[in-house]
Each structure stands twice: as structure tokens, then as C-alpha cells.
Image 1 (tube, helix red, strand yellow):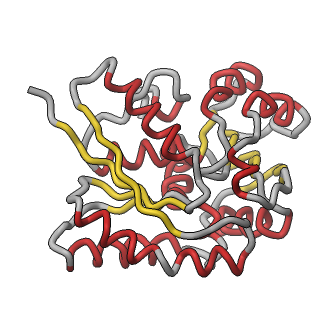
Image 2 (image 1 turned 135 degrees about the horizontal axis):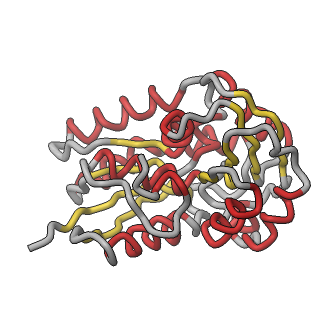
Length: 250
């Protein structure tokens, strides 16, 4: 009999993508592995992607961690990359530790991953040092994300900000546009492409196409989070059709 794992996510109230792409990937995994998954979310208020609103939203993450630990989830993912990265360099470690302490205090101890930490860790896993990056944020927030990633030891060779301030609009961005955006970027000398440095910008349908177009490994915030969750659960991090990171090579 296969085991069923409860996947918990802390998501911005206006996020529609992480509760779409992570279940989609884990459902694909269910086609080739015996484990099964259920999905549970708690929401933090956020409508506009700006620094002040992100900081206010992050303060709600403690409550969300407690709520999800009430459900005794097996892993907890903080699904907002820019909220973490806009709080200062290395903040994902602070957040992960604090949220884990809240689950422990509620007798619902569960490993905690953040999409921000998952992304920088995923780059290390695939051995990337030089990257190109696509983000939906306004340029000042994108610069914070780029600085955060550089501080973790990576060289961001090129980056593209779509400058979409409304988070619902980010979720409606057509992933079919991403290959054309990447084609206009400098990817010749990079080790990997971060196709979506955002958990809200849909990207999964274009990952294979961009890998074929560029010949480079492609990761996204959602793919990296899925990898980190599977590793935290001590499960093989393999999902068909979800890019190099989840190919089974790592």
C-alpha cells in the first residue's frame, strides 16, 4: 500500500499558480511512483507586488505555519520567493528556522522549505554558477532578487523584468511568451536559465521548449520547490516533463 503525503503551502492570497503547478508535477510523479499526495494551503494577504505589502504579508507567515501544522502536513512550503528575498540577504534561512519552530511548538513538527531557498539550492544541485533569469516584478524588486542570488554566490549574467505590479496579472501571464523572451536574452555563456524567479508566474508548459531552444538546464521557482519538498520527504526527486532538475539525474 502506497503512502499518502500531505503537502502544505503558505501562499499569497492572490496566488493561483503554486496550487496549480506543484500539484500538476506531483500528479505526474504519481504516474511513475507509488506515493500519493494531498494539497493544503493557508493564505497571506497580498494583492500588489511591492516591498511594503510584501513585508506586511511575510508577518502573516507565522500564523499560516501554525494553521498548516494543525492539519499535520508532512512538509510545509513558503510559496513566495520575492517576499523572502525582499526582506534581506539570506533571509530564507531565518524564515525556515522560525516557521519550523512554530510547527514544533504546535506539536505538528514538519520540515519547512521556502521557494527562495529552494531556488538558490537548486542552482547548487545542478552545478550552475552563471545564470540568466526572468522575473515578472518591477525593476527595483527584480534588482533585489538578483542581488539576493548574487549574494548566494551565483553570477547573474542577464535578467529580464516583465514589470507587472498586479499579482493576479502575473498569474495570467501566458507561459507561451517565455521562449521568445529568453531568445532575446544573453544565454550563450550561462550554466542554467531561471525561467520564472516567481511562484506566481506560470512557466511549467514552456520548460521543455526553453531547454530545447537553448540547450541549457531550466529551473523555475515551482520546480525548485517541488524538488526541495520531495527531498525533505526523503522521496526520489523525479517528475517526468519537469526539466533537468527533476529528471532523476539529481
